[in-house]
Amino acid sequence: EVQLVESGRGLVQAGGSLRLSCAASGFTFDDYAIGWFRQAPGKEREGVSCISNSNGFTYYADSVKGRFTISSDNAKNTVVLQMNKLKLEDTAVYYCAAVSDTVCTLAKYEYDYWGQGIQVTVSS
Image (cartoon, rainbow, N blue to C red):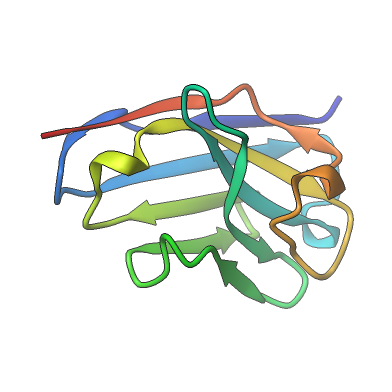
C-alpha cells in the first residue's frame, strides 16, 4: 500500500522557519519524483517545489524561490521541505505527492499519490 505521510510543526511567526517531512512507503522511492503542494482557503492547490529522486533535479515556484529548500534522503525514503523567511501568504495546507517519473513537475494532475496534508499557519 502506498503511503505518504507529512509531518512537522505547523505554527510559526512571520519571518520564521519550519521544516516539513514527507515519509514515503509502498513504492520504489528512487523511481519517483516527490512534490510539495499547498492549498489556502478559497484557492486552488498550487505547486511549491519538487525533487526527482533518481537524479536530484529540483524545481521551485517563483513565490518560494530563495526561501524554501527541498531535499531527499533516499536511504530513509523521506523528502524534507525547509521553509525559511515565512510570510503570511505561505499559510495553507501543505501536501506531498509522488509521481512515477524521473523529471519532477509542479503540475498537480501529473501526480499519482498524495498525502493527507498538514496545516501550516504563519502568524503576524
